[in-house]
Length: 402
Ligand code: DHB
Image 1 (spheres, protein in one colour):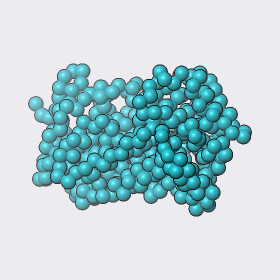
Image 2 (image 1 turned 30 degrees about the vertical axis):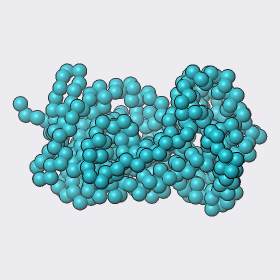
Image 3 (image 1 turned 60 degrees about the vertical axis):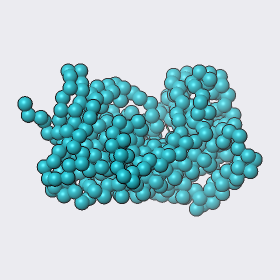
Image 4 (image 1 turned 135 degrees about the vertical axis):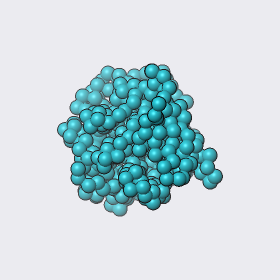
């Protein structure tokens, strides 16, 4: 029996894996995507919902933007509220760019539909058990993947393997075994309770609200579904947040002149942990990691998906050249190309988080300094512009029209 061969094996059908598979296909490089979860699970898991300009550019330029264009909320600004006084950050005014509020699972639905329409292979409910041969350096060397689905265990060979299997990545360990490889980490003393609500919009634009009682964020999903977040303790469970407590805290933290948090039926509640982590390098031989498998950002600013897409924008051209021309020069620069951007996004997410959250038990000095920092940013034209640039995303990857 001959073992099937593909140029690129992709482990994980999240934003990174599906975007990569699509970009490779557009350049004539085929791949197989392995995903342990069901298609339904992938398409329904609730995640963040902000797409940076670079992500929007990629969707539009590669023919996956049609539904997003119709359904997403295109926003030209955000508001930041300090004790009920709101300041608008004009994203378009300061940068010429905008962002879109479009849920991550909608992004995934669009890419899954497009990959399947293009004849792409996404193996749902299939687990990759092992990858061997990643260090093979000779021309013609391949990796061997063993994987299991409902029918049993199989093998496949690939020139390159990309593990985009999320923050609990099963394959990151192989990268970290290399001498000099590190995973830099930071934990935060707060978390978010995220809720989905059947209610009309609270405000035309997102509101990031800081208050003595803690942070709150008003976002949206559609005219009739809103996404709200409340700062909570990392140990909190959903049971500690009955609906009445959620409404009381949201009103306290967000309501201000002209804005009243719109209430409705809460149909989803979950606690989101805050963590930062960066793995470097992001390559070992023929194995690459990207997205959450390589790094985690705290949710403030919603950089996670965008960073995963930016990793792929850095990785795809190298893989395409390696597969088509047998030239790995660009591919071997992947970590060096991706990491500076990752650290900038880490900094932004950390900075926004630290500036907007009250730390439980913080000293009067630290609380005052933190608010002084936020005021300095909000009251300065340069400060607002800096925030706007980081928020919409800089160093936009460019894509040729297809
Ligand atoms: C959303 C999440 C975020 O973390 C953020 O900064 C803005 C919006 C959201 O889920 O809509």
